[in-house]
Image 1 (spheres, rainbow, N blue to C red):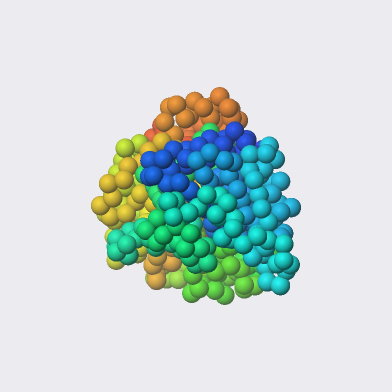
Image 2 (cartoon, rainbow, N blue to C red; image 1 turned 60 degrees about the vertical axis):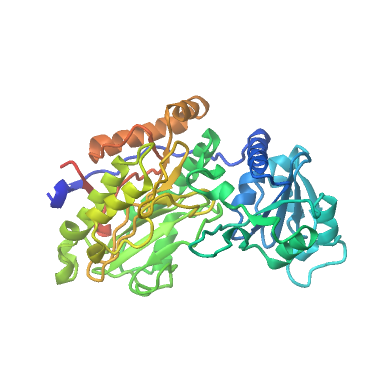
Length: 468
């Protein structure tokens, strides 16, 4: 037994089954999202909504249209009545058929060649001023801009007018309307308490379960086939990357890049006795684990041989208490305080928010910060992303995706996606019965390695548990 009744327990890793690809939302689902936007537009007295996206900042356009700009940029314009209009560059025209809205005639498009890459044809587009004017933007318009960030008074005095999308778009909007009438409304999609993307539908739960399974099965493959004395390039092959788009770069830190945060594989040799961390993130998922290239504590440096009892064990315990308090109505500040108390900063160095929302983008926003009054609500998709750091012990990780779902939402998943629901129930049973985590009924685990934390990667069957 380790501190706080945490045990190193030898188990055979469970199998919860593969997930069939659930990728394309229906046009009806997307139309409902557009209509919800229009309701918020009405509440905020907006005449137009302008949503910007590019290859990295694609999540909000993807949410509304299931279209992601590739190589290029895109702009979605939503008014109160007409079908939305999307502006795309040369190469994205052929990609529009990925959108169910476009395919059923509910999404208009126009080729706007300045969104294309440099030196491609530029001679067939109308001007941005002409396009925006035809969509009814004038001096009487009030336009909400959605990019990928919103701001507060902590950062800027007039935060509602701070807009991070390209200036040529914002400048044009302000010239057609006015400075006062062009505002940042990214929060309507991304805010943790009320943003539309913080309320998952049953389809979204099924989709994100599919990508969590894909990512976690890759992590399971890598850990169960873990070897030392090979390069990190060779080890990364064990992820069995499927080709589905990544939400962020594959991370892997060993002896060749240990001091470089967020590093990808660099061709370094994986050596016994050194720390190791890695993560794989398909759109809508991020599965990370961290520990040591070791069979037991005897392979660690002498001053770190109490890694499990003094670091990984307390970390695991704190994460389980976090999960046990992940209930509808719990305030984010309570979860933050729980981690601060169980993992003192001077020993564990948890600097970023202990847990955040995830969607198509790896980090949406977070209700968990000091003194947060924002409450956990049904539909939140939470990343168990609690990152400790130590010069002596390096780190540990239990990073998976979980959804908070009330009885109504759980029943919708059960009715519409029974196999997804069944896998979630099996994972819950494993976490409760095998690992001893008192999981609230509203938590649906999406990962196929739910809370499995092997501190020593060369002995993966030994995992941390609250049960002996």
